[in-house]
Image (tube, rainbow, N blue to C red; front, side, top):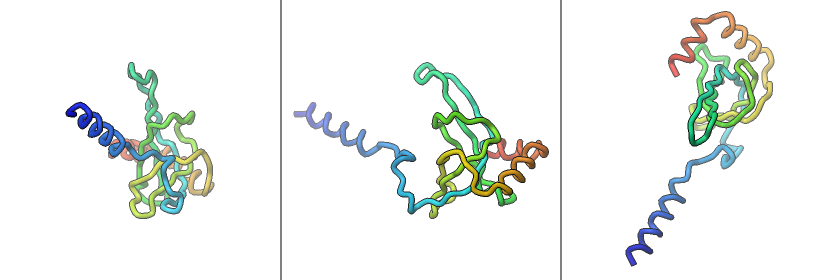
Length: 128
């Protein structure tokens, strides 16, 4: 009897602790904004072999843009344009939707800023 209870409790915990995936989002809870990939960190683990951690910026119009992270397997490089989905209730809840340009002028201006102002770029990466 104890074994059955243990199995049921374990199954319940596994199901209830499942992490929310980007695919499980309600599009009405998010808005799209222009983003850019700041850095692509490539690592190695024995369990997953090569891993990618993307650091991206969004809300590029702010003096201090917001920075997010993604462990998804995108085939993407630094300084590429992306569309970021941002939660309407929590602007820190974001994820990369896909490659793309929403606001070309904003993207080009920000990309040029991080390419020419290395201190600004390093501060974005360091603070996050």
